[in-house]
Image (cartoon, rainbow, N blue to C red; front, top):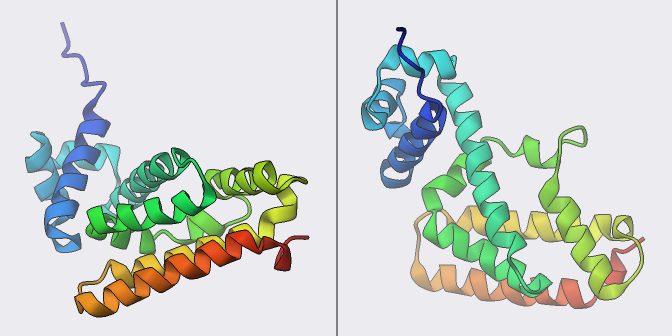
Length: 183
């Protein structure tokens, strides 16, 4: 009887890759190291991910999904911004991974569940159609991403605190006065 393939192998490989990335950053992510961490062989990893870039892309999609899960649990638009920064504080290496896959978030032909969800939250709170809030949603996403990118890099704690406090003030005002960007 032939052996049964491990149905959870791809998930096991991605979990292993994420553990390595979280602890050691990008330098740790070799297919050989991932195979070792996942308890499998390098050829087996190559069967699932044709190269390191394919693994990066799958890992970035996984991290983006985890970030969205955190954001979608928010009770308010203001909480979204706070959860975004909390995710970055807890996962600075993973956030750096998202920098390499930024176009997936903004490409109009790809699914953008975070943007759609954010636009619906604006419409639910302020009225109108979700599409009316496309620009303000983009502004909030770009503002959050810019602050998070800087905060994901180690640096002076006082400067980091200043950046974070000002980001939250600006984001809160943008939300409160979203009409400046609403269609």
